Length: 102
Image (cartoon, rainbow, N blue to C red; front, top):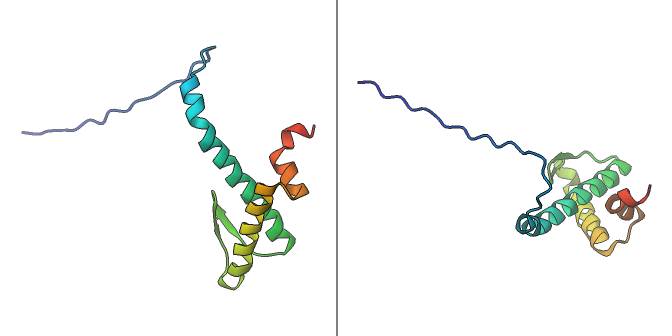
């Protein structure tokens, strides 16, 4: 007697509509905001590291570098977050507000 298992695949297709799901929008505000802060941090760190010719490897919001540069990189990541939170840097302003500079 042979038995076979068949996998079920669910496919969702988004169809344009005028309906706005307010609950989903409210739930997604904070995750999207945090994601945008992470993206801004990656951008600022890359600019800082390239200005200093430091090697860096990035996957999403994870940084890697050579061991002899890690202390410098940690400082740059922290400084970028501080700049973002305090909106201190002109680079930060252009990163966070690029859509308003047209």
